[in-house]
Length: 305
Image (cartoon, rainbow, N blue to C red):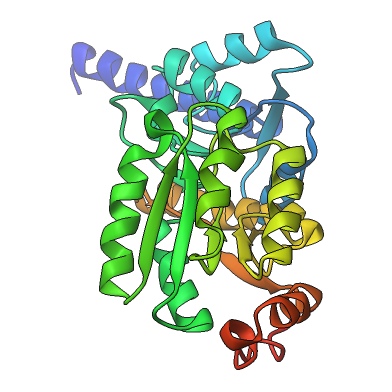
């Protein structure tokens, strides 16, 4: 074996040994392969984090933007993580704006993820419940020939209303879109149609979202024999007949499963959350009293609350 070859071979062995030492050090040091970035400690985000931590089978490190934004930004910019997941809009914006060194990114706990992610490929769970799913549930559970009203502002939900009208026609329902630009317009648009509608379907909308408005509309609707459908437990507590409930801990567990596919199989999945239905028996009884001809034959009392 000539000298140049021996030197090259020794250098190769030294390189391998050094690489093994670095890898061993990283393992012993507990280098976390997954970075979790949390927008803040509000309850829904913490519930999602808890569900994620229950099911994730990788080492991870959590950064709370509300505690130390600069530290979170530093780690987003660094090459420490191959994979990161953002929980909530602020964390999503941070991750996709500064995380160019992170090849695998996921996002959860925000409506309309594309707004925060821009031109990047979207991996994660969008909190918006598809309007097609809601309309089909109303048709299946509440029957055909119903008239459904949705209060909305066109900037946020104009496209959604067009989709809702199309799906409603396909499911033998009539949809009335009530466009409002401010909360002061809501009752003026709603009251003239209360006698001709069966259902008010709430969708996430900044103009119509306040708890005070929701409570007032729901009580007014019940007295007129109009059922309300909402998108979280607050609507149920306010008197909504049907609420589409997203379990935030389950969103976290669902995200952990998607994260595993992203890391192990390089599958980038974009999906919606699992939803369960919550029926309000008291609301149905009030609707039957107000308009028995419309509600007395409805058989949803067997549905679990």
